[in-house]
Length: 341
Ligand code: ADP
Ligand code: MG
Image (cartoon, rainbow, N blue to C red; front, side, top):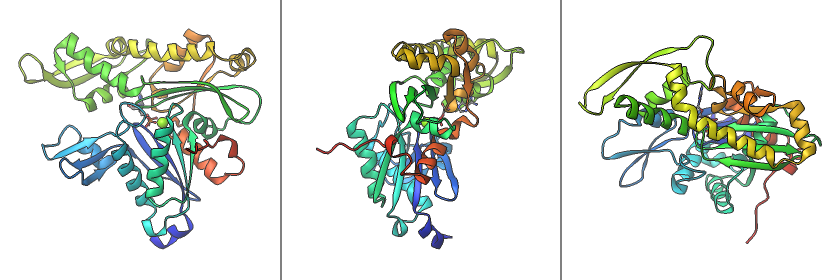
């Protein structure tokens, strides 16, 4: 197996705030795991990564700490982001065979310092050539939009930590906005709601399950119910509660409204010619947040634009960076330029 990696040392990575996906040339997506590391608290020694680290979350003792290095922003923890990136690269391509090409999807709001950090860590992991592509651009390529044409396309990628909304035309981003309200914030809103309304403290994992199972942005034809478990804040004892999609929708309303306001403000800044293209073609939703039930309908109602949820929205970015890797010369224009100091 390892021997063949010598022919496959070209990889593309979606370094997401919630999930990291790795595409290997001629193979496709080989890794799809949470962007989480578990390290020894004092030595910072890596103990686990991805799914394995996620299972440790909320269950660690004093010696172990689980970290989502990109969680509260673009790169919240440089050192851990580097550790994670290197470990994922190592998983698909052992260090001695490494040395070629890595294409990484990065949030469009990334600073130069953060770009440098991503580049450096890929290089430390053995990459010789590192190419960065803005995530909304990668998502657009991944879902098959012809990004080179002069007509405008709007893409909205709702991930864990950030929602990125961009208008793309002629292989460039015409205007964009990156807001730090996305999937995690929806999960947090559920935790907060049940704490205040029901004196019930939910774990993050439970709140995320509730969001995914019954979370919605518009009334559902048949509202869904769910039994949830948490700890009573007053008595301190575990307790179960029946809830339904109408109640969870109330909890989600505030962050969903803010995400939609972001869309509106991007539309307001879009040049009129492109705005009219978007009026015809609509907004394409990608990222895990696109799967909130009825989010498309809600955005449609509030903006008056057609809204399309991309097929398999969670893999749009990695499919896009994969495509850039396979056709580098064709996508030269979408590669972010490194600034020399
Ligand atoms: P990132 O690119 O930031 O890593 P992703 O695009 O992988 O993020 O999306 C992760 C987010 O999507 C998480 O907040 C997760 O809870 C949410 N998510 C995943 N599946 C669903 C679903 N079916 N319904 C609602 N939210 C979902
Ligand atoms: Mg993403």
